[in-house]
Amino acid sequence: MSVAPPVRDSALVGGLLELAAATVPDQVALVFGEARWSYAELLDETRRLATGLEAHGVGLGDRVAIVLPNAPEFVTTFFAASMLGATIVPLHHRLKEAELRFSVVEAGVRIVVTEASTAALARRVARDVGGALKVVTIEDDSRSDLVYAALVEDRDPHPGAQVGAGLTCLYQYSAGSTGRAKGVPRTHEQLVAEANAIVGGLGLHSSDSIFCDIPLFHTYGLGCCLLAAVRSGATLVIPDVRQPFPLRRARTLELLEQSGVTVFPTVPLVLRLLAETRRKTDLSSLRYCFSAGTALPVSTFRAFRDRYGIDVRQLYGTTETGALTANLDSDPDATATFVGRPLHGVEIDIVDDDGVAVLPGRIGEILVRSPAMSLGYRNAADDNRLSFDNGRYRTGDRGRFDDEGRLMITGRRKLLIDAVGEKVDPIEVEDVLATHPRVKEVVVVGVAGAADGEERVKAVVVPDGECTDRELIRFCSERLASYKVPEIVEFRDEIPRSPLGSVLRKYLVEE
Image (cartoon, rainbow, N blue to C red):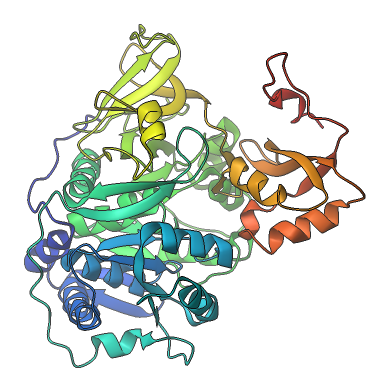
């Protein structure tokens, strides 16, 4: 299947929702449990929320942090803030206090929109950072400054601020090429370019239904679920259960079947767990099932196809660029290990160590240029010199093209660990462990998990005195989101190094 040119219209993120409400006002825009919103209703609530946020000081250039799991309030807050010309800072809802404080301070957040369960943590951060930081909860909660319903009720719909397409709309965090968290700004124009490329490339339209189990704070969920749905006028189905995925597999299959989902973006871990589920399910409504985030094991591809008769196709993208490629090949079985061809407007070069383009079949570093990509990290000149090269982004990944232009990812240069469907920055975990008084030296690595393509977080520690693995795991649990906490702690007398002093990580991943 060839990649179609993008659909062109509004250059503003808020304009995507306005366009959908104008063209398909009665189409179901959002499904969450038994609740339904048409595009006209979703736009009305979003505009009223924008008025409420503006009444509490949110305006052009202000930072609005969304610290929520996937929920309708994430959607309305995202678009309301964009209509005011504010910058959205989507954050993982399971961050610990120190992690949330770092992001709020670094991004200069003015308002945090969160759940009641996180309100106390957010209020502590607000007291620590001072200033005019306010906390909004989506439920009625005495620990918050504001309640979502009060921002929406009895408000006139906001007409929208005068916003330029080049204004920063989104501010996300990426580990960058060195492994340390970097702020990634992207403009309205860049986000709309990504939405256009996805919708045009996949041929999405208002009769589609997109299942959104990927976190919306992640680039994958934001681009391939939320922006793609609204740009095409499709229905976005958000699961209404928040248990760990193994406990909600049956509910996921039920929603996929009952909602007539046609597009299912997900990750290899979820696909493997669904393939192991015995529930009888008809997924024949699916036009596309996509996998991204980490390499799709061939064993998972085959198990899912054998169980449901659906071929899984791979996507490829980054926080800095949004979606880059999609496998839309007419023979997904023969091309299962490829992430596909570039989407419209995306240019990809494979280069050797000297920066010279290599021939098809040869492996090299992946460099990309895209109208959807960020122009560089905020306040990180050194990382920008390493990662952004003459208008191209150095992904840190390695790959090759075949003779027909399909891209295969062959390896990662970055240190990120793929743990339980999440990306873990080992340097962040090392920084936490290094503050423990009994840790002299530490290196964090990913080791093979129970299934292909999955990793566990392992800390290799040179202790300074008596110390236990349980003590260090508990120490991390108090300071890091649960998925970042090491499952394994190994004590050694020294860290293996090369003659030049580099850590020999290959000797640390061996069990």
